[in-house]
Length: 77
Image (cartoon, rainbow, N blue to C red; front, side, top):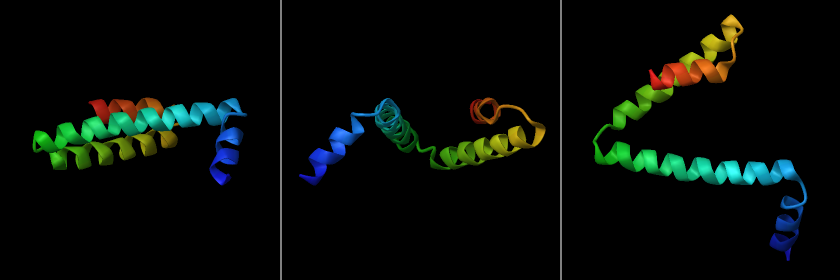
């Protein structure tokens, strides 16, 4: 009963539907990337990318640029 009410409320609002779809996509993508990193024995590469992305976000906030842009630039570059 509790779960039924939860899912009814979840499907009532569009922003919650988008959040659900986004979280499912992020979970699948992160799972695939994690398996790839482990199989290629690049575990420390994942930690390095995470730290570089964090630095990119901080830099974006400091210079007044969209932080998502700088996160992508630092993470992919």
